[in-house]
Amino acid sequence: MYAKYTAVGLWVSRPERVKKSLVIVLYIVEDRITFTKSLDITFASMKRVIFQDAKVPENLKVFFKDKGKPICIEMRDGSSIFLSDNLFIEIDAQGTQRQNIKIGKYLFAGEIQDIDVTLRGFGGRAKSASGIEGDFWISLSETKSIEFDN
Image (cartoon, rainbow, N blue to C red):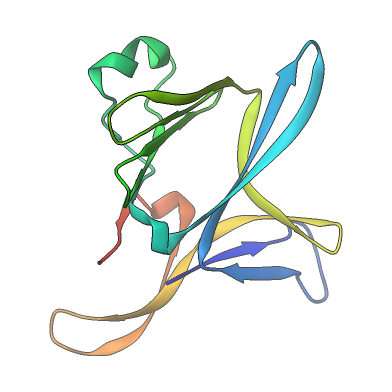
């Protein structure tokens, strides 16, 4: 499986990057100064990523109250990341918070030679229920969750 990041706008040859990871750019505002922090999380380190309808642990619900449901990235080591429009929380396998960062926004994005690219969706090869193997593509807006095999 791969993630495809492409540039927005009209291009003769649209810049794109294919990665086996989820690139997240956090826009953090501190004392009226905005800076970015990038995370590059490989699919191999993930157990599951839930883009829609993620369940929030009871001890974190207070942080996400009235903010909608966050995205959840469950890692193979038992840790998790919860990400909403204005909050990034990372917890370890025991449920202890490692990070709790207020953010201005986040993007699934990156850069190719100073050109901003954003996540468009996921592709790869799979086998259908009838045994036929082929390529697949699903846009980010259609992706509810992804579970990764061992």
